[in-house]
Length: 205
Image 1 (cartoon, rainbow, N blue to C red):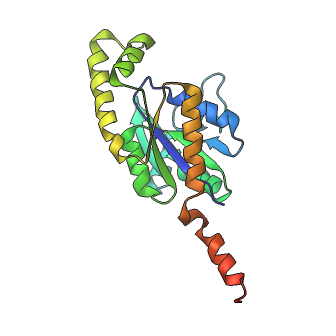
Image 2 (image 1 turned 30 degrees about the vertical axis):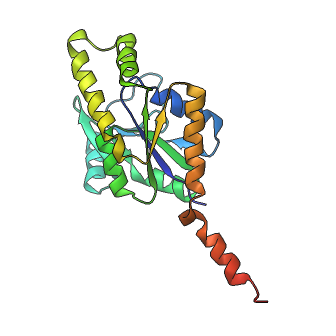
């Protein structure tokens, strides 16, 4: 059975990374999508695990050959998602999870409509999102309202996703995401070939 690509999005502070790490730790047939970047490797990073580290020229070759699911340039460096490793994993029955912002997620759905499943992760309420952002302390006071406006817009796009997971408890949220992953494998389109094979082999009475 083929794997699936589970594209996870949500506002800052809802615990997406913790959720995905929990899933990967518990499921041997799930792997995290490794991004490519043109920035230099940093101490402690491992090529092929932290990122695929490539030259700027090589990254632009990947763009030109349409080898990336999505990409962006940030502070003079490219970041993007190589398509081939994802396709190989899916063909080998491995589920791939990735954390992507909303615009990128919707592009991926258009690129891989049959393989990509969009999951939006949120908090129980927007007030909780606000409190978590403030508690993180990594947003300058003058930028907080801008970050909150971005979070509001991201939440408004949840209607375009296949599933919504509410992360008010990491254990419960990880169970919900795992249930989604299992349900996708049980869809009729994924298993109808088993019925057809059975029917073709049956002998009329």
